[in-house]
Image (cartoon, rainbow, N blue to C red; front, side, top):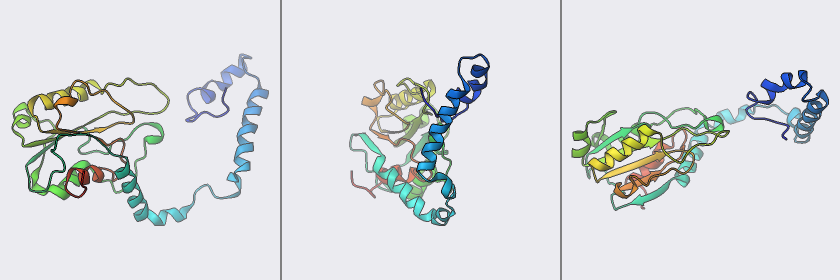
Length: 231
């Protein structure tokens, strides 16, 4: 078995007392588990230094640049039929989808809120200005008549549970609807692992897999969409 559960709320902590009371686990077993954990933390000097190093709080600007560079190196251009890079001034863009205004986060250790957030809408507006038109729930006609559509889809994932390859039903429906109405759709996917795209990938003009990009990570897909990075 294991000595440490992270997070520690579901099994060991919640069931430990009951299992001891029922005689299924002995206190000696718990002592052994605790000693193993303490032995490790002592060996790495965890008790000999402050747990929080406040010097890092003075390096927020450096942290932002590192976070952004990490996000840029992680993005995957899965498909491009020549629509990208899209130069500023080239076309009007309809932006829609689940993560246009909010930062995509996973669960568990991926649920890091960060600071000074830059949403996809803000990042794209910085580059394209009034070329960008954000509509939360566009009509069929608005999608069909758009010169270019940027569609944000994704899902929340976390360690600790299994999940299917499918997007959530509403996200899958949004992708299928967009590519059925318009052949110039750039689909931006935020997820923690691979997803099934077989029902719509062949009709999308481009697909960017952006993972969980962090607090300023939406700037990475903006730069990839624009002429700032050569694809």
